Length: 399
View 1 (cartoon, helix red, strand yellow):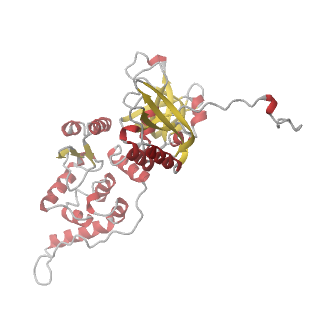
View 2 (cartoon, rainbow, N blue to C red):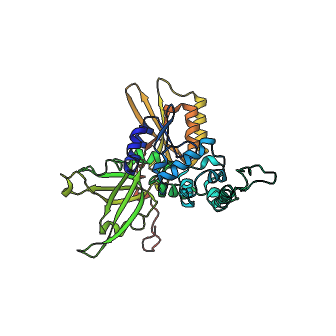
């Protein structure tokens, strides 16, 4: 897998696809690291692959050779230590900042915002040390001036938000490596999506739904009608894809579809593309993924069976736990009796879905007995009988 990734090191879409396949195989693909990465992807453990520095934008082969050569004396201990040991003619500040943005300097201490804030001071100090060595300057008693790796303390600045950290990663890697904007919506992606970006261009005669991050919106004007439409760049765990929003739909969705938003997009393929290898996905509707939970579209299902029902004390603990996490998601019991079963919706319990609640429920019932499901809307209440309705007070429309 490391060799396969290395063979496509300049092809972002292929790298994303293979990283996702590696993770599905139980392999861990680690971010780049100045203390461990080579030019290409390398195996660093039984099931671990380290990202190659050659895939980081703005970092050339000469800079990478200098970094690898500099760590032969031992691992880099700080940002100043890194700057002092590499060739600054090959590794300028732009290169170091790209490495920080990619996460390659995370092992040097501090968080990324601190490293970027300290870069000017570290670079200036390293340049001074380089000049001292080149001029042959020595300490007072004749010995070589010792290298000090921690003279420039990191400044106390707030860390980047997850959004900024991932955005800077994407700018230098072409994709996200230490996380993904869709990571917190995995349930929504799996429950509501019918396609991924990898399969989005395959023509289908049915409605298509894809959960993805909108990474770019390109507004254009139709030459025929003069109306505005949009081309979208989408990204999910599998890679990237493009989509088209026609003028009529764009007039309704332009406020919803914005860059960096995680959306569930619904649409179809054009009949004209039926026999084409690449079919264009045409967006007809869009819904923010964070609204799906709030709308009660996802429920928490508890799998119980007649053969192994939970003890009464456990059932009461589950009820109390759900009551302590009120929210919009319905609670359902999937009751199995032999080969037959039913899904029962609680009338009184609705919860806020979160990692803490799910972990606690799985701790009580077992991992296989708690999962998220698509929840159908509850049936509407029956109409109020005519004879029981309050009489009109005479105002128009009031009862």
